[in-house]
Image 1 (cartoon, rainbow over the protein chains, first blue to last red):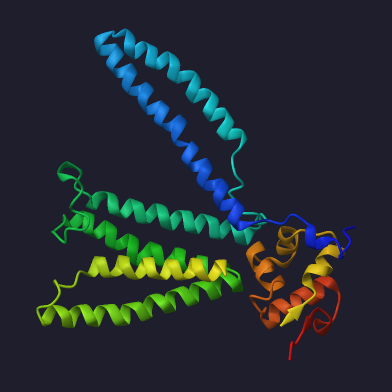
Image 2 (image 1 turned 30 degrees about the vertical axis):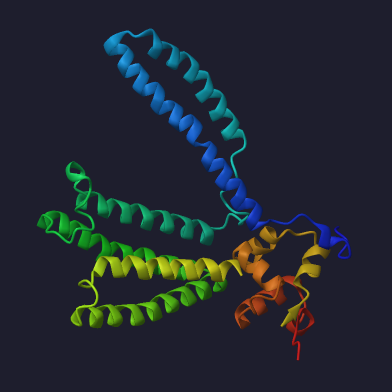
Length: 214
Length: 64
């Protein structure tokens, strides 16, 4: 049994140490992933030109990718952030991943890859089928994820979320009318709904992260 | 509000994650309560008291 008097010195989970480790690990992940891309390109060129340079690139690249991949696999950080494996925690994890995946999936049909992806934030028209798909995602499926997430969050997470969205809405209640009046007065460009949404979302997320870290 | 959660946890040799699992909250929640950054709701305070088999007032103290 741990002596309560010596418990202060116990090495507990450190969010700062965790994030530093995660950032370094993620940066190092570019070595095997970048290496794989280089090998794939070199293999493509080699099959077309039979150039010995491409063969050398592949021969050097393959062990680098294998060794760095193995080292990164062995030094993989704890993605749970020290959280216990509970049913509630798993539900939150899957709904968060699901919401992120659906959000990404919704935007893909709106991106005009042929013209540099400008369609997403262009305010231009989109085909009605793609619009219906995106609308269904945001209006029907995303709220379900939000409700499941909310019901499974513990009181500390819920309080942080409430604080973040309160800050977000208060930011909205300042930014939106100021921008609108500024536009009508000829001082600012026309208000952009998506830009407003993204700005408020970033502010709310920053407030949630700040609340949870303090 | 001050509390003895960290000491009670140490007496049982539980990590924050272990206590969080027993209370069905996140480890961050346990940390926030232990460090006094968050005062638990009454239902959670009762859960903590039941887990440690102690009255609430023996775990949580009003600073005033």
